[in-house]
Amino acid sequence: MTDPGAEGAAATTLSLSTAAARNLSSTTKTPPQMRGISPRWLIRALPWVRMQAGTYRVNRRLTYAPGGGRVAFMRAGQGIRVVPPTLAELPPLRGLAPSPVLEDLSGRFEQHEYVPGDVIAAEGAPVDRVVLVVHGKARRLGTGEFGDPVVLGTLTGGDHVGSEALAGGDSRWAATVRAATACTVLVLPRAAFDRAVADTPLLREHIDRAAARPAPPANKHGEADIALSAGHEGEEVLPGTFVDYEVAPREYELSAAQTVLRVHSRVADLYDQPMDQVEQQLRLTIEALRERQESELVNNRDFGLLHNADPNQRISTRTGPPTPDDLDELISRRRKTRYVLAHPRAVAAFGRACTARGIEPGLATVEGAAVTAWRGIPVLPCDKIPISRAGTTSIIAMRTGEDDAGVVGLHQTGIPDEYRPGLSVRFLGINEKAVISYLVSTYYSAAVLVPDALGVLENVEIGR
Picture 1 (spheres, one colour):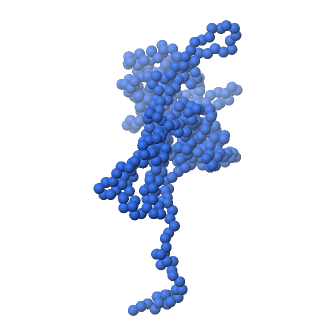
Picture 2 (cartoon, helix red, strand yellow):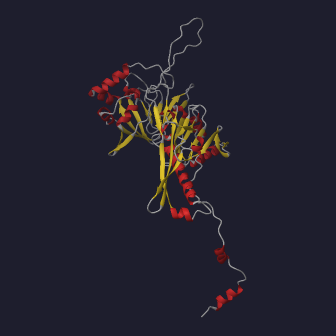
Picture 3 (tube, rainbow, N blue to C red):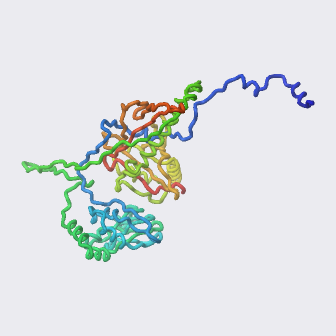
């Protein structure tokens, strides 16, 4: 029995419905889209150097390492303890190999807590202890030319002051250290260190040897000095000199990002129109490899930019959010800063800081695209720079190019089955299930030619 209402509806239909007509029509299709594609400004900004032998050696002038790097910490029961080998970053302990001596010394540190405003060390007082900052932020405050207080720097996790206490003598604090936030520090009193020296002959030998060894002549960067004479008149005897090199320069090897792309032969044969299935699979796979490549260039512990900045080129924000003052301090530490890299949320936080001051950041054109700029330097967004759970991140500034002794990207071209420069697609064969396999590989690394080519602004707060 038919429905009278349905018959009435059919009788009122005057033309073919779109649902039925679609069966006789084709669709207009887009290539497969991918949300994970970013601008990858770092890959585009780095000048890429072609390696010929698989290894890139960075030769430098001989540099005397005085120490001054950051120490590391670990949990020990209910407290915190300094990682013993990192104590060798304190200048008087420089060159002391990991040993029970450092283990014993790390156990002599005392944990202290400070609230904002507390004085950790007072200017002019005797240096009677070593202070290691575990957590928090402290400021070094000095006295200006006219007696006014000036901020000389900021100390954050891993920084240390007062290592002069280990060298003996009657040294005094050159600046006041005041807690800017809640701070956790480890303190080694000079008396405790003296007891360790008395108990450990090896430590006594090292300290005595370091005190007796004269400081080698060096320039302000720590490089072996080149003797010169200037401003003289007449027939003065000129000094003789030579330029010494590092005996064991750093070498970079190419890292690899690889995957095996699999496509069934039935798909490749029967469903290749209007778009080549293998080509589209390969395109998206390469995009994912390039994204991973940029992430490694930022975060890899061996050659990534965040982990290869010199300790002297790492600074902390003054108040938390990235302000114009912080970026000025960052870019002033090197000549010809060419690019600044920041997470997009850090770029937005910098924009808010500028707005609060009534300042409008500039614009720069990079490869035809308009980006934020500061002091004429492009600030490129890079979402591979991590953001911590506490809402802090880092901002990178760099000089680029071999000619300027900057940061360079490394790759090798002309490799077998090269699909794009430095990227190969190699046919691996067809298995017994008729699945075609391709090995997709890209090789890359990055090198910092001199320490001041790369700087990092740390503890950048993006939530306020």
